[in-house]
Amino acid sequence: MISIAEWMIAASDISERDREELLAEMLGISKADILARPEIQIPETKLKCINHGLKRLKLGEPLAYVLGNWEFWGLTLQLTTQTLIPRPETELLVETVLHTAPDNAHVLDLGTGCGAIAIAIAHERPDLKVTATDYSPGPLAVARTNAQRMQVNVAFIVSNWFSELTGQWDIIVSNPPYVGTEDVHLENLQYEPRAALVSGPTGLDDLTRIVAAAPHHLHNGGVLVIEHGYNQGTAVRDLFATAGLAQIETRRDLGNNERMTYGYWR
Image (cartoon, rainbow, N blue to C red; front, side):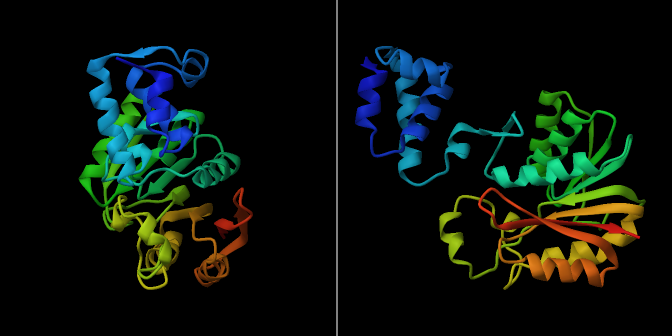
């Protein structure tokens, strides 16, 4: 057998954070235990799985996919390669919805993926009536599993944006694809589903569709909340204004980048 300390040294070409996360998940212990008890021996039965995970990390696969789960809004959500990895900046959407939602409001999450936004909102505000959509049954199956594990009530519908939806909501929220087809950042995102990332040459194709159609699905006084790229704030505010939305505001992420915009329908 090999100790945690010995394994950490042998795997030092991977970041310390990723090594600790991998060991903690595979051994079923806390990161505090890894630091406090480096003499712990890794069982041979676990070592094979740990080293397989290490190999995947060395090939560039994101830790979230190696672990099969990721934390968002304090909730540990299951992931597959069919779902985008939730980012911390997306929590801005959840904060904004929670801040603007009246009691018992109806909330629609478009393009839910693993369900992160919808589940976080429903977990925080059980009074809200949350519906989540995705164009593909695969991600929706993951989202349903996460909702069941978190014991929250979310309705799931297969729909390409608004294609299968009727009725109106108090709040529509979405983290749609917004990366341009030639964006240099794509080379670092090769393991994530391209359909959840890329949206035309400028990255604005899906944002344009959603914003243009949203007023038809919002109650008067309803709110549209959208995540977008760091350099798309001006374009998205113009889309909101063209669609007739008012009181338009953009919020910045922790990196001080314009990251999400919201506005009210009449």
